[in-house]
Image (cartoon, rainbow, N blue to C red):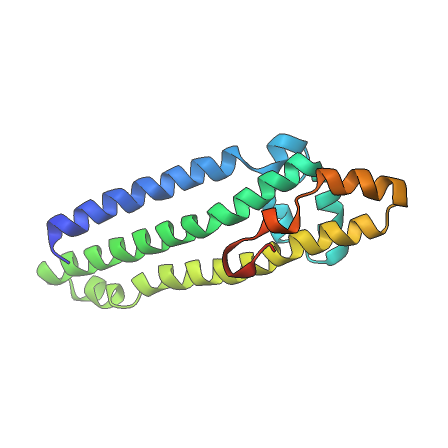
Length: 168
């Protein structure tokens, strides 16, 4: 990639990364429910804890969580590509200035950014699939009258579809 194209890509990817960071913070379910954050849910550790978090969120918090998990894929893509491209730019600059050690490190380190985004995706996908299953499981434990009102306030299966059947 030529330097002007790389610079433009870095600016766009950097801006996208910052925008996703701000948006994900603003829509975090904790702001709607005054309860746990999306990270608390992602690292719940058990189905029981995930159910508890979803119950604390309520319908608006669950909608915010759904949106957050969807947008997280765009965030992963933007930060993974941004940091990889930045690493390659540093590597190329180090080669041009004959900084051998930095150039050698730069041949490997940019791939760590791509690996981090991949690991983030593998951590988020189970959360996406756990969200509707946990909502359904928590409804089964409710008395029949509460189940009817709960089903109206919970996301429907069709409205919770996500990339790679992540939420549906």
